[in-house]
Length: 374
Ligand code: NI
Image 1 (cartoon, rainbow, N blue to C red):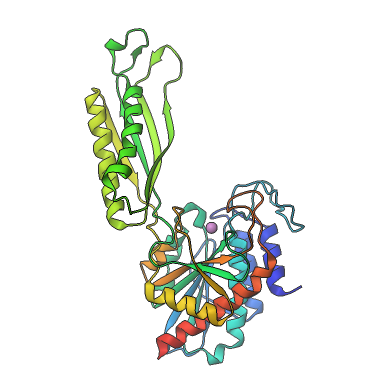
Image 2: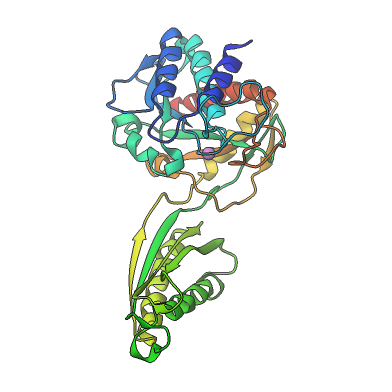
């Protein structure tokens, strides 16, 4: 069995949750050490950054893989299924990690012909949407001129990649609203202020932001996913709690929506004689694929005999977007066979997709260096 397959199967069998990727990091470290790849001495608790340096004076490009798994009970039926109860690589980060390890070996083998440095970023905590910030707290991206990441795509067959200009994933923000009324007996509502009717009106009105305030040609959504109030049937409670997420592709929408949400929550609450507190928790922005590098990544893929498709738009999140704020780059979807969706307990990767993805990653990094070195 190839080293690449061995790595993939080992990683798949040993999934670890965000910021608990100790065994995974140790595995990556030992595989890179065996291959003679330089590991950079950054103070990361989990995850690591390595590099293959050809011409030290040349440009620097980065390849990024995320390494964490999910709290999903595996039902894929593969012989190398998860040994860690209740945890699973259901988003293919085992694939990303194995592919980057193999790309590292391939690049190390041709080190002397590289006109610059390829930085290899093994990022923790992507599923928590902020692991990228751990890497960005190190000097890993300081001198990087282009950055690339692959993500598994169970909507493309093996040998196909998908790219799109601009947003290939959405911004991921969270909000909380607490409506404060005045509790009283359910039988004498006139003696209090019911926060539940106000909260219900806020839920309905929040949906008008996308339909009335966002351009109909801009992808955006507001989902209220958590609503809690009261403890029993004959008491009007003091407060109601709402929580949800906002996803957008355009920065201006991302700025406008929380302002509208806050105005709606406060205005409606006031109309009902209650008050509302609004809290916004900003997550990663939308990915922003640079058009020039996207065309370049597609061209390199075609040279490798890979089919290139336009990636369908989605509203999922991906904290690779933080890297794209430091250097232009491309977030690329790699076909792993038409299997169950991402995060599903039956998600699998067709192992035939490993080798083309590793070959492509190494070729892309080398071609990017050559382009920059010109
Ligand atoms: Ni993922």
